[in-house]
Every structure is written in C-alpha cells, then in structure tokens.
Image (cartoon, rainbow, N blue to C red; front, side):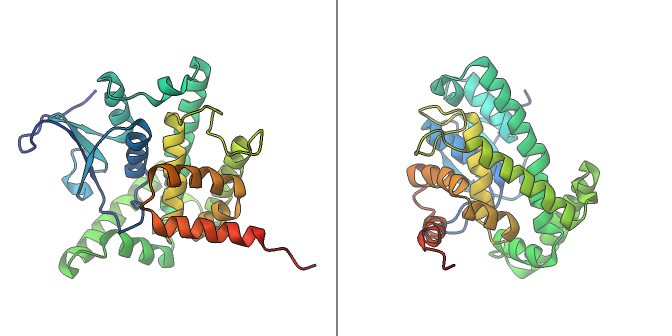
Amino acid sequence: MSTIKPTDTKKGGVILFAFEKREGMPTASGYCQKIECYFRFAGVKYTQQDTLPFKAPKKKLPYVDIGGVVVPDSQFIVRYVKEKGLADLDKSAGLTELQIAESLAYRGFWEEAIYPAIVRSRWFDKENEAVISHEVFGGLPFFIRIPLHWWFRRSLVNRLIAQGIGRHSDAETEVILREALESLETRLTPTGNAVEWFHKTATPADIDAVLIAMLVNICGTNSNPFCKKIVLESSVLRGYMKRAVEGWFPEFVTLLEEIKSAEGKDAVPQVL
C-alpha cells in the first residue's frame, strides 16, 4: 500500500482531510462521507480538516493522517485501519467469507459504476451544476471560486468521459441510477418489520458504510433531484438511511427534517 510520511503534521490521532461541510449537512463527496461513516460506525475518534483536491496526495479526497502516516483513497484508508487493528466492521459484524465477497462486489458496483453516474448528473446538467458548485465552492472568494470551479469540472468531465458514463445521455444515466436504487431497495427489504443492515447483522459492516454514505450524499445535496426523490419516496431506502443518521450523525438536522417530512407524506391517506 502506498503511504506518505508527512512533514508538517503532528503525530498521534486521526485526521480526516475532506471537503468542507455546510453546517448541519453532509459533505458533498460520497467518498469523504464513506470514511466518516466507517469511522463513526467503528467508534474511531477523528478530527476533520477542510481542504481541496489539488492539495491531496492523489489530487482527490479524502485522505487521512493516522499517527503521522498519510493514507490517500477511501478503500486504502479502510484497509490501513484494519491492518493497524484500529477497527474492522466486517469482523465485528461477524460476516462470513461469502458475505465479505458479496460486499466487495457490491462496493465495486456502487463506487465504480453508480457513483460516477451520480457525479455525472451533477456536473453535466446546467441547473444541477450551479447547485453543486455553490455547495462545494460557494464559501470561497470569487477570484478563487471561478478558476477552481473551471478546473474541477474540466477534470471531472474528462475522467467521466474516459470512464464511459460521461458518454451517456441524461436519459440513459437516469435509467442506470433508477435500476441501481430499485435493486438496492429490493436487496434491503426487511424480512420483518424493522429496517435491517445489508447482511441482516446486528451491527453495520463495511458495505453499510459505503451504501449509507451514498444515500446520505444523494440526499444531502440538492444537486441530485432525480435520485433524491427516489430515495425519499422509498420507505426502505429512507428507513435504512434514517437509522444511520439518527444513530451516528444527529447533526444532520436538515436531512433528518427532510426524511421526517417524507414519512409524513406517506402517512397522508390518498384521496381516490
């Protein structure tokens, strides 16, 4: 694993370097949110330092400093945390090797196929682009915000086109996103009355940190109206997300209000 020795960070503790968050709301990055979910689910104490991608070792966020060692990329952060014995959600949840293998496949699907589609819907649509740009860069001075927005969008567009999702139309992208969310809803449908974790375990596993991060990220921004509507209208997806937010992210006040509002709409009887 690639790690980098820093020269300007005090050793000791865990520091998460991520996009700045708006008060009471999640980060605009699904991968940054994933590490926050993992740390909180696992009880790993950390502090967050706001930064921007061009300052990161791999020019993308998040990265962490753990005891003086810098580890970039969310999947390698989780791996490093496990190797150092700081936490292991899969082990704590008691997953079998088969369940771990399924989690790996599902993580790859969401991180490498679906999240790029989510990002595409933000930055290729003019209305959504204006929203996400304001949410991510709105607090910066004008003379920094404009060139940074241009650089960030340009690099994203080039990567998404190279990856493939950037070559699809808006309608085709929405088909991909709808199928993914409906499939997840089917996979998460509880066997009883209570909302359950992905593998029906007593505690969340690695894959729950990934999926909760994605749902929270979708609903924590107004730049994904298509996906957000699907999630909030699904009692299964909404309940899965609510369980995690209430338990580990009570500061996401606005998101909790939106979840409760959606629940209230479910309770209103339909007039025939």
